[in-house]
Image (cartoon, rainbow, N blue to C red; front, side):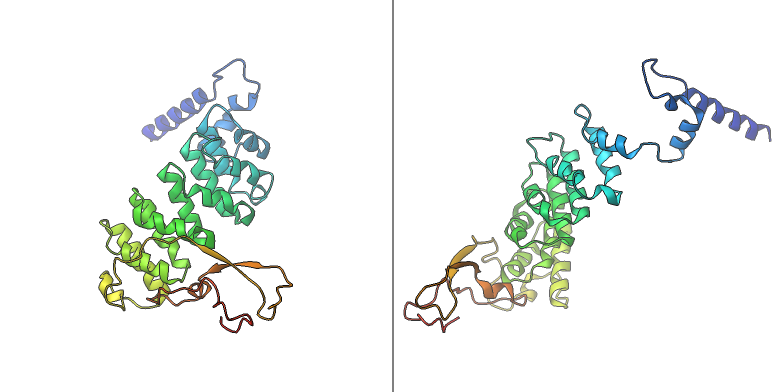
Length: 286
């Protein structure tokens, strides 16, 4: 009984000491109160929304900026403009030097799921810091975008960070193309099991079957494994409606090969058609 009383006394003394003013120049008198320190100890929120927003603009301390973004991203009202605009600014290495702040800003944009800021998320895949690249790839696991395919393929194969390669391989499950399929086969030969496991999970997710970790068992064509695993440049070509042999309408751009976007995972012919034959002025050949 005496020990319990002594413990309670020590707790009260510690709280009282923490409530003692640490600077006479502070204007916020609430930090000196025992009530404030008790709330802070037990995790009660003591920072107002206005203070959180101001913390995100703190120019001196990256820890304050990071904490502010984390706090704001938990609020629905902060997952829209003008807050998202500020988060987008903090994803840029030229404006924000601290990679941990850039990473948490990317996560906040992903949580908002506002495709207006997809360019910032895609740009984060090329960030100098692997922490930021990893967060961007994680965001794209649940927020896919076709413009990310080639970059994710490169990261899954050649990024120096194991975590980045693994998260990119996981994100690739969202894209059912033969090029992605071949990239995942390449990842099954990665030196690290984390990457191999991520690629295996993506292949199972795409195909609905489990062929294990041997790329040869997933391959359906002799000599496929290890070939054409790096993404090729996207080719754009111009097209008109099939009936417009007089060329009276404007040309529209499409990505080639269009057929590859609808492929089931697995080997397909590498032959693509950049344009129709010269004689097909009626547009009868697709």
